[in-house]
Image (tube, rainbow, N blue to C red; front, side, top):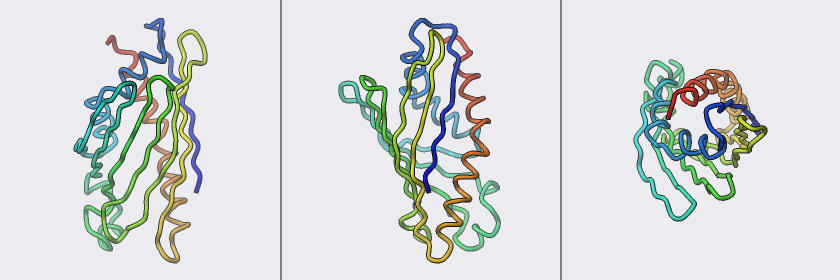
Length: 172
């Protein structure tokens, strides 16, 4: 199932809003882990490297047990919704790729893949846009799971956007 989201951010405290957004929200792995924590997850950075203008980061995202629905926990355990996220971002092109893969064998083949970009839309505004495809390789219920995941992401989007804007409002 396709999912497209665009969020706008105001960076009035800089003359280079795209670079400032990239430095504070993409390049900073501690900030990324903090954002996931605010959304009810633990994060472990598995790999991070920068070569030239490109950064690659691989993280393990582990939702807190209380955020995993009871039926899912009963079916697949408390780690049912853990996933690996791999992000690659090219600072010279202001574009990246993001892939997720569930780690629980009960959800093998379930995850997402897509692209995202950061664009300047005014003297102090940037847009962060993602175009991704969520896929659930689950017999009989895959489509329903895909819809539920996309609905959950959309429902949390305004909270994520607010956390990012608050972070950007702070002085670097």
